[in-house]
Length: 236
Image 1 (cartoon, helix red, strand yellow):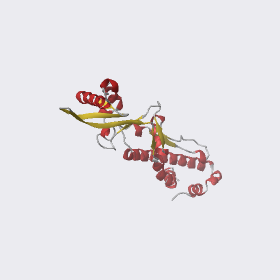
Image 2: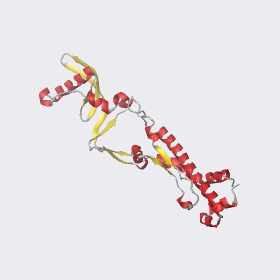
Image 3: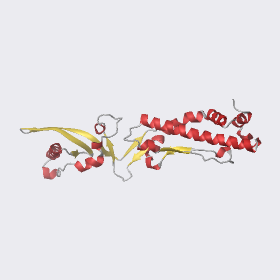
Image 4: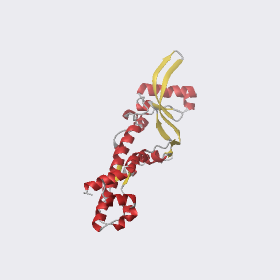
C-alpha cells in the first residue's frame, strides 16, 4: 500500500509544500523515476507499432525513436518534472505519418512512387535493392524523338526494343517500366510493359496514423501505478 504522503500527493499535488524536506526529496525522486519509466515504455511501444504497421527498409527509422530522461535533481516543482519521447529530425518523415499531411518533393520535382512490382509484388515490403530509383535512373533506355522515329508508335517500339534487349528501364508518360516478351513476327510487334515507378504526381496526401500517440496511451494511463511502484522501491 502507498504511504499517506504518497497518496496525498497523488490526490492533491498542491499539498506537496506541506511535506518535510526529506519527504519532498523522496517524492521528487519517485516522480522523476516515473516519467523516465513512462518515456522508456512509450519508446518501446512506438518501436513495436512502427515495426508492425510501416514498411521499413532497415532499422534506421526505429533507431531514431528516442527518449530524453529527466535528470535527477533534489528540488524542483512537480509540474516541471518531464521526460520527452519522439523521433529525431533525421527521420522527420514520421512526423507527417503522425499528423497526416501533404507530401511534396523538396526539389520541386514530381514524386517517385514505387509500385508493388518494385517491392517484389508485396505492397507491405520495402523496395527491392535492384529497383532503387537511383539505380534505375542509370539504366533508362534511349529512344530518340518522335520526329526522328517517324511516328509515336515507332518511337515507343524503338524504346521498348532497346530496354528489352539490354535489360534497361523505359520512361513513358512520366512512369518507369521494364519491358518483357518483346517479339517481332512479320510486320507485327508485341511486348509487355511492367510499371515499377510512377513519376507523374507532384504531391500525395498521407493519412493520419498516430503511432506515437498510441504508444503513449498506456504509459500515461498507468502513471499512478508506476509512481506507486517507484515509491515502493524508495522504501515508501
